[in-house]
Amino acid sequence: MPSPGSDACAEDGGASGAVAPAPFRLFCVFHANLDFSAIPDADVPVVLERCYARLLDAVEREGLPIGLEMPARTLARIAREEPDLHKRLAALAERGLLELVGSGRAQVVGPLAPVDVNRANLALGSRAYRELAGAVPTTWFANEQTFSPGLAALYREVGARALVVEWNNPASQRPELRALRARAARIATGDDATLALLWNDCVLFQRLQRAAHGDVPERDYLEAVMREVARAPGGRLCAYGGDLEIFDYRPGGSSPRGAEDGVEIERVVRMLGALARDPRIRLVLPRDVADDDPGPVVELASAPDPVPCKKQPRYNPTRWLVSGPDALATNTRCHRLRRDLRAAEACGRVARGSLDAALVDAWRSDLRTRTTEE
Image 1 (cartoon, one colour):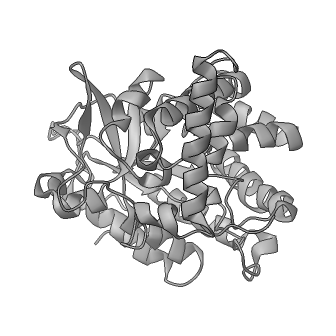
Image 2 (image 1 turned 180 degrees about the vertical axis):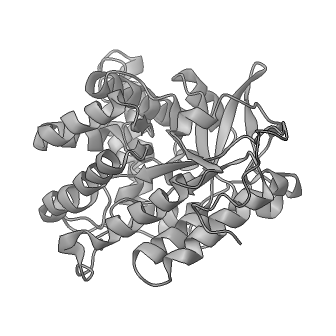
């Protein structure tokens, strides 16, 4: 198989008059979340320097366009505690090297929260993105890559044009999705409207993670991408759609070897750079693949898997329902808080929507997994 950078498969559009095929487009969405329950507050400066700042350094140095998804709470914390980093985000977005991908005010597992909590989360997030980034994202990332059909219309309400969701688990139960791994698709949002789907690929992004960590050779990841390029000429693929805080940092663990020098971020950049230099490939922002080809309207949920989630089977809605410390009681308190708040609003004791931010924050998925007393 030709390696990235080889032009052995490129067609000659010169004397033969053949038309060169459309480039295969790769995009990335790095998930950044300072609320991650495994990151203690004392480590936040380390995470901002080793993970966030180094990624931006590489983007600027190599000219690699990326999507960066973060809850508005994380963006607000960056603006408050690291204003220079916040300015860099804005500058890279202005240059077309970074697209801010939305998730909401906080990371909330949508299928587990009431519709008004989800609506408030997206609306509050949109307002904060406009204030802190100057615009509301048009590409959004399904929180925890967990989806139910009712969420699509809520994303449309905040102006979303595309939604990043995992392909692997829905496709495992829906045969009609299997041929669409590198192709366009849309999901219905009601009233004859649709939302473009950008497929995330957990198998692929976990390959990149293992290669970045030095567990497998980088060529393992590169060859996996190139197989898809050869299989679906002119297609599109999410080259990475996972966590940012796992490179040169280990949530809840000791630092990996070489973390001080940014070894793992450099491996990520080296792999993405090798792909970007291949003449068959174009590395683009997520929004650049959302509008060209509408694709078929599809469904993600199925009878065996009514709430598609991410990665391996252990990642499923019950993870956030019952696996955290006292999770059942936490969820019960959240429902009671919502009930009492809505009742107080209805009788005029509380201004409508005035406490929605606190309500949304109480529903965060990061309060339901590896939580600490802090």
